[in-house]
Length: 264
Length: 329
Ligand SMILES: Nc1ncnc2c1ncn2[C@@H]1O[C@H](COP(=O)(O)OP(=O)(O)OP(=O)(O)O)[C@@H](O)[C@H]1O
Ligand SMILES: [Mg+2]
Image 1: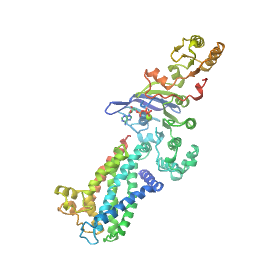
Image 2: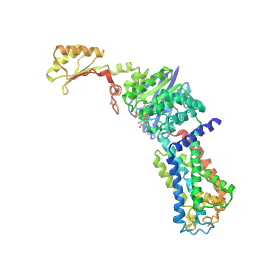
Image 3: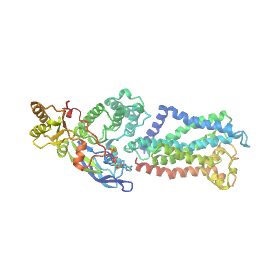
Image 4: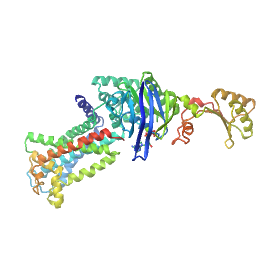
């Protein structure tokens, strides 16, 4: 047991080392969401009538946070696909380490990367007017929630990364799935404008429940949310927790099994 | 004791359309080196991957160091080292980072991993490059570091998949030296190669594989005798062919084959260089000046033609260097 913990920590440490050796990666991974904050804040911010105190940016920040952590699965998928291609996964598999070490190490590493990204985004958000009003404990819980969501999404990335043969395929696959998810949600605009059927989808969409949960935790009324009175929009925090639990409970075992069997 | 036993391994791909392994069996005595020799697509990498627990065969069984590969892969991983066909390293990290990481994954403690990394870098003359990212390494340096990584805990059984492919002659010699030294240290080694010469130099015994099966086995000499011995080849002016043919026959004791088109006379000879000298002397006395003369040693290509009746998919001439260099203008 102790051994497996130290195994996955070595893999996580490898990722932190990569960040130190090529800091550009982390810098760009951080600049991109920071840019999103600025673009959305100033491009849409003027056009969308938010109707909440403090303006659109209060609603926007939880949306962008969730979108960013949802994309953790991209980092995971691309990172693992690259390791597969280079034969590193094979080498790891030939070592006497626990079966889950490499994939746990990877998901934890990607989550640590999110810590840096979220801090930078939070600061940029603060500079452009984001003022969470719920007090330090809830704000902290909000960020913890985001990290947990990113972590659970990361497991989907493991499966994608171990399934495709090419980094680029992994990247495309991720963009094709995550972008629609984040836009068919309450992250950036109210869902009321959508056709009825999409509204239902949007309300059950884990991105929406996450955004709603974060808005609650950061102390902003979720005016983009509940249109139909569905259960998830009524209980976003609980629903998000259920989603996270399901993601990990379903995808983690599949991932580990896949890792054990995977061959280039 | 047998350190590696593979029994009737079968591995198919694409729903049986591709037979990567087709009933492959082999055995390696403890402390010896087996050269797995075969052309592209023969199943070398697949064999290594099965034995190194990376791939589950469709059927068949295998043991490594007495441990069942299919039943107890975790135990096997503790005693093997593997260096695959392509260097498998973290390109963004330095050589030092890579080795210490692998050391930790072999469950050395922090200072143990560092100490071992230092030793290995020294041993493989990579100390100067230790703090540089792998992506700045040359092919040979990568290969050496990859090998180093598979030696972190002294493995009982080592698998090297084409350890010298892509290296220049000097790099190949250096690699051979390193491998020689390992073998002296008592490791059991399974090495794949496309070069007969390499198998000849490094291996105690050789298994030739093609289309997923072992088609011949033996020591290098046994195989070469199976293939046929060295051939003496002479090219002369057209008008001298008849006379030269007689002289070659006199030395070789068999009727030489003559290709009039390229004016080449060739015949198998048993004691190569002595025959060469003898023929040269006779030719000189007869005032025949050959345009080209040389000894041709059996190549992998010859092995394949003689063993399988077909030409290897990709013909790889072994680099025989000095050994067939008795050519002159
Ligand atoms: N994942 C795979 N899917 C389909 N076919 C495969 C796969 N892996 C190997 N093969 C096939 O199995 C056969 C044996 O491949 P293998 O890699 O073992 O050959 P090799 O002897 O190592 O060749 P090389 O000298 O080119 O490395 C080849 O015909 C190859 O195309
Ligand atoms: Mg191969």
